[in-house]
Length: 95
Ligand code: SF4
Image (tube, rainbow, N blue to C red; front, side, top):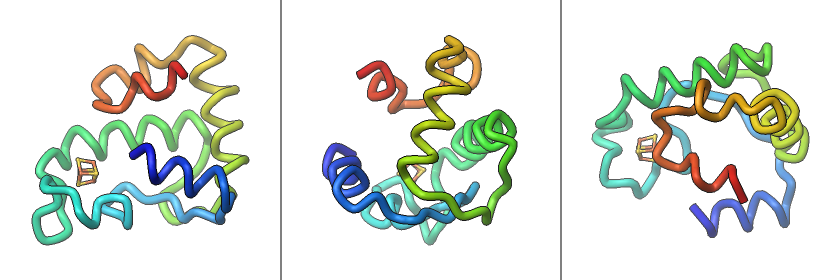
């Protein structure tokens, strides 16, 4: 995850939002034939984030804009414990 964040920070790419497995999941042991072993939980987190950002699966956004949405709508409003309460990576958002 640290490497992925470094690439996102360096290249600031356009991202297509999804509620399913993506390129980040490519080498994850939880990715079983394109479906996350924890799909129910992960999809639920994705859906809550998309609702919070007023965006939809398939929308395209630049990394820096997505970070601003997360900061302005979740982190600065102290919503991490609500929107992201069951995310394994939540501690990264406190950095
Ligand atoms: S746990 Fe699931 S959503 Fe997270 S990287 Fe692995 S396959 Fe993707």
